[in-house]
Length: 150
Image 1 (cartoon, rainbow, N blue to C red):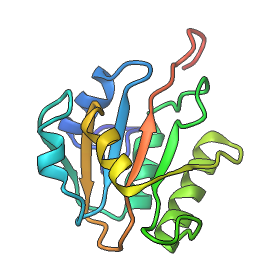
Image 2 (cartoon, rainbow, N blue to C red):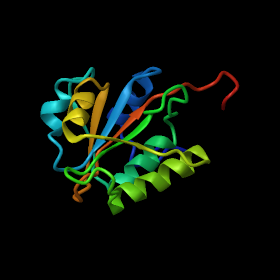
Image 3 (cartoon, rainbow, N blue to C red):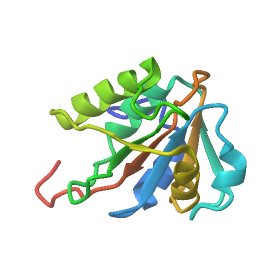
């Protein structure tokens, strides 16, 4: 355990978050996502795990991980097949955590399912959560930490 770091963030996840650079994508996926096969195609090349609900994982990650302010797609969600405008409870919960972490409304864009898979394959890494609800899959593009930040 370390002071000031969410205990959900294990050593493998911390190492990956630290190694990522500006513009790298992080995928946080539910238990049904083809996480292992997709993760093998990422920069890291292996799957990371945090066995918790998607919103809890996003809260932990965003406590350390800056979102990219230079792009419109820094936060994305997998859209529901056949109903792209529907936002299920798991995505609403994650949206609240994003807004809290950023201190303002920061809407997620929606990404069609197969386009999401393609984005995930190009990501730095994939964290599979213990989220069992459908469409608990998210992409976050890393921003920068300014020199005067603590």
